[in-house]
Length: 300
Image (cartoon, rainbow, N blue to C red; front, side, top):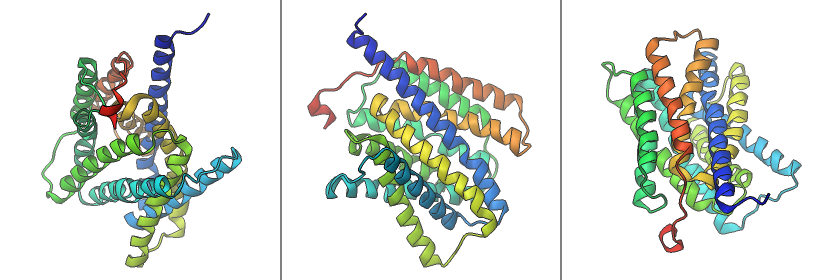
């Protein structure tokens, strides 16, 4: 039986959501590796520089095994490098610096507001049409995050850095959707990682800070997990757009909670269970929302 356009579109959407969830799970491991690296004496900037160096090597090797050229021409390559350097590199630095200045619960609550900013930006830029199901999925996810975390008395620097990270990552998702259109996900991911690695490596050199040898194994884990997350996230954005990908990526939170309970012996409370359940409920709602193609003039 020949597959109809509607069936093919629905299948593509489900694959996109699945890819976003895989990316979220990979991203969700980062907090565990980061905790291990910090325990070994690592500082934020050299740790991030090493992370993206490993990610770049893994992605270049991945493209090499597939015998796929990663050169996209000076213009497109430069734009993706800039996206990585300014977008993801800055977001990572802000997030890790926030973790050094505020409890993880406060940082997490503020940072996981990024699907709101991504969705609002996508609608404002006419990359996405408003749909009630999109709003329901967003509300479920945000309610889940909000039920997990609660604010504590803390200086404003940490929350402000986390808010900056949330806004920057929302801009990154929008930029990724626009700049990676028609580009193989692994290729776009490679140049993004290289851009982030170059910018953070330059900062680490200026600071004169290095990475302790004991922290290199968890830092390598950060790099490998980031490579998987980048490829799958770019592939998801290409299929379902930036706003839906950012909502599906709330699975990152569930992954982090689960792994922290298993490997870091953190308590699994009723609040965590309820919050994780709400986040998970957003996924099937998201899957029923069909992405409508916008006119070319609107999507430009």
